[in-house]
Length: 281
Image (cartoon, rainbow, N blue to C red; front, side, top):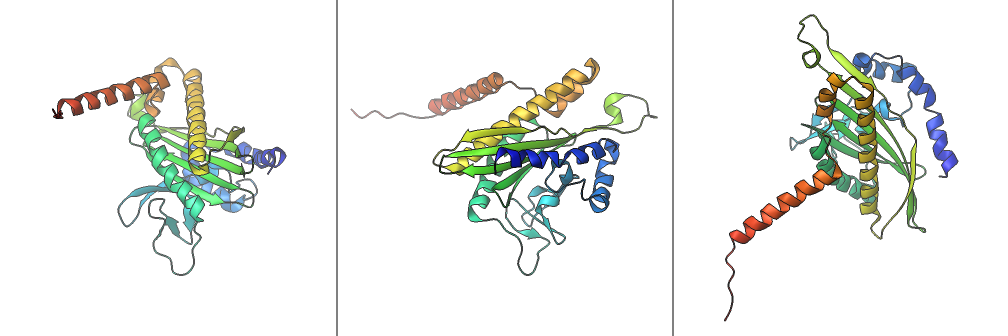
């Protein structure tokens, strides 16, 4: 798929964005399923806002995962941990190729560390889906205060060891009345916005394309999340900055690196202190 074809995907979503601007954020979870039925031409499947609402379900091992339109089939949903559908379905069910499943498993493991680093009490689920040209990955993040859906379209150029990535994301932010005021008369406030940005990149692939995809996509997600929350801090008044900061931790790369190095140094020193070194004479 060339750049023109990738841009066409985003052009088809402009009507969807205009329609979503009219939806009260607190009604998004209720109205989006209805709009999908009555206005399918405006609410496209391969658009991040179409993945809302993000619901949490558990598999047979009691592991929670985020469920959305992308991993559902005939009333069941597929767990990214076990790759099984719940409730159980008889007959054939859509499953990934071995390569895409390996990518999905690695992405869930790797990006879970990113979510733990930046978001409080958050859950992450990553799903892959084969397409006619290339494949797509959805990265879903859900915490008590924010829900995020990233969609990344990937087209590989294995001969050149390159890949094209096209990314879009939707963010839904919730504030409870207790966060904003002491008045018992105030109602629940849900701050919602759909951030749609054409972020097309071309990146190199190593001999291990799966690991390269996870590294490239992880970097793109981190940059977009940081950019979006930086915009919120700029737009909203100073008295809301503390609330916004609670949605995503504002750790700089340097601080994260220092913390990791301090933790590693402490662990190493502790291990050496508890180790008896025997020197042969």
